[in-house]
Image (cartoon, rainbow over all chains, first blue to last red; front, side, top):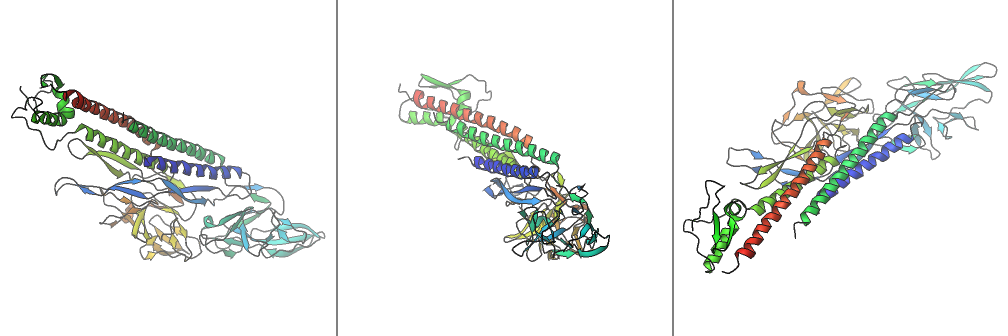
Length: 261
Length: 292
């Protein structure tokens, strides 16, 4: 069988994966603090059809070996950690991170997850939680008579009671990673630490490379629709091109079989 | 009967008469199947079935031109070319991929063989914003360590492994001047000269090497190249490392598509040539062989 058929098929599969990733990006165009991903590919092993050969006499050149590749495969789906746009919400419990860093979230199983989605709420226990109800940080207890909550750019959380008195009730710490693209996405806008991301470095906002907090704002998705559309068009064209390669390989096999009369 | 093996003028309308009954034109016999025709003639003559060959006729052995094997080589060559084009197209979105070009080389007087070279021209650089994405804006390669020795690759989407070494997508350590580069968890800066900095101190410098002009590097998959025997570090002023960028595949998809159409047509033509040569052989075998 013509190996070009299989080679082109790997190309079609790659473009399909790429389209799936693009579709997920587009589906999350309005997801708070969503980070777009892109599929990365690498070429497969090469088959050496003929080794390097010496042409003519001793003074002449050497023809390089002829190697034919056998297609492509998915190497990684990389998340791009660029800053999303900050959108004003005027809600005192909405906090966006401007710069690097992640909020730390306690999962029910005791593990720590990380998120940039700062649409917080106060639970029935009076604790600051994410919109999915996971505790933020080590637990910031909010008094029951609170009228307003202030969150400073450096993470200090102050509660103002109905009497107009302000009291500091805790401080939000952020975690930073050397390679945030290496975090594993858990869904629900949560990420978990992996060997690829490196260990979390915890610090206060605005300290040593960590971003600042902006109250009353949320970070939008960093998906750019135009970019995704362009990528989708190019994926579709590449898919078509590879299908043409399949067709050409098939037609050539057809021509070859017609030789026998 | 007068017979010349290589007439000076190809338009000579002299004809090989076999037994006075059947004939093939001189041009046909010379260009397509003279070897077979002459051999057949000798066989027939040896069996007393036709007049003997003239004394000065020599059947050239081995025959330099054999239409069938030429056409078959052409078919093989175009198949090979199609395989390479399919691989180029399959890798149209593989970062750092370099397309291959296939050339025909005359193996002997009439048979083409495939020769492939890598088109090492740079692909478009795409900004990713990821601090460990590294692309080279110039000629050259970063060096990674593999189980089978050091390998070249054009930058890539790097990361840290469990032991904090800087590795490529598949976990191969990226080599600096002092060997594998070990980082801590703080932000990494990579300068245009390849210096890897953390806390404003230089940890190491990426080893950037280049292949001497005119050398062709073997490929190993995973966008790796096998270094040549004669290696040289890239001149410091010829190194331009870009952090936060990746290099697109340099495959020219339109060109590949056009090439593919051409390959398909040429393949069909070579197949037609085989059918025609076969038809001549058939005539030689059935018509020429008729007893007088």
